[in-house]
Amino acid sequence: MRILIHEDYEKLSKWVAYYIAGKINKANPTPDKPYVLGLPTGSSPIGTYREIIKLYKEGKVSFKNVVTFNMDEYVGIPENHPESYHFFMWHNLFSHIDILKENVNILNGNAADLEKECHEYEERIKKAGGIDLFLGGIGQDGHIAFNEPGSSLASRTRIKTLTYDTVFANSRFFDNDVDKVPKTALTVGVATVMDAKKVVIIINGYKKARALQKIVEEGVNHMWTVSMLQLHERGMIVCDEEATMEMKVGTVKYFKNIEHKTLNKLPKLK
Ligand code: GLP
Image: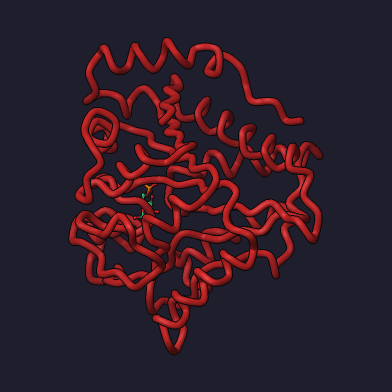
């Protein structure tokens, strides 16, 4: 697993945006062979989305032949609710780029049959040829998508009950009122993410430092579900200095040293 430690969130965000744009351009996608991206919500990817929009506006990347699959969605809040992940994605990314509406896939947390919705989502991913690059963030407890601690590391798209930690953390978006936060969500499974050809996880800020220490310096563990990335062939964590505060000085120095060339320049766009 590669660990790229950037000085700060701005640098990290720009680097990830260039990395993704470069991969899309390199694949030279067509309507028959689109590039398939897995995408997260949350505050972690916002800087990356901002930089991607900039690259699109400068004509350096197009999403015409990109298909996206989002990680998760709350159950039971309307799509146009400002905190729904549908709203988040259109507001923070999709409305500003040339992606086709029919190429956007987000779980429907209001489906009449939620289990069927989850099952069909997995089928849709398969039909699209699998995910080329899954971008993710993590919760403070090391969860990926909504795969809370104790989730099966072989899990697939399903309904999950959110832990109090997650409900509490997300209450900042719901007037700081835990009662307003949905208590269940639909989420891709750990295995759904791990099936992607590449997985890139953004981890920034001191709040995530404990999780980063666990997933880098300790073993694969279902209590820190993103630690499964250790078993992925092309797993990459892109973090900032703040998030490394709980890791050993030696670990931080080691990864900075082996990645110093990568860290000193932006990924090629072509
Ligand atoms: C939610 C989402 C995760 C996301 C996490 C962290 O739990 N389901 O996909 O990674 O929030 O959010 P943030 O980036 O705001 O810290």
